[in-house]
Structure formats: C-alpha cells, structure tokens
Length: 76
Image (cartoon, rainbow, N blue to C red; front, side, top):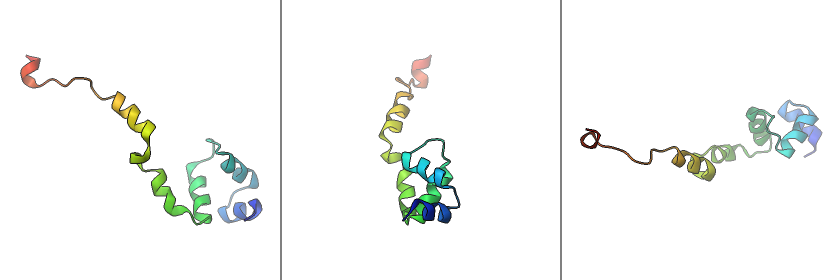
C-alpha cells in the first residue's frame, strides 16, 4: 500500500504517515490506532496496551512499592 493511499484511508496527510513510520512520539495515539485499523492490524492494539507486557513499567511500579509494611502492633 502506498503512503498516499494509506494517508487517504486514515484521513491524515502523507507527512503524518511518514512520522508514524518513524515512530514519532508527537503523533497522537489515535492516529496510530487508525493506521493500524486501516492496515488490518487493529487486533494488536490490545496487546500494545497490555500492562503485563510492559516490563519497564512493571519494574518502575515495583520500585515505588513500600520497602517495609508495618502492622498496627508494630506501629505502637
């Protein structure tokens, strides 16, 4: 599929499709979703947003957990 055809079907400009191909973070996530839909890959969107596959995010979340949890009896 050409860039021009993909852009037409996704209702965006050719420059936006080029930015999507480069992975530009300035492109709205809705544009990425639309492009995936046009390409017939919309079913992969759920996997992309699945927190169980985000190992970096899980590590960062674990670092924010308290190191020690006190019970009420210990707090006195």
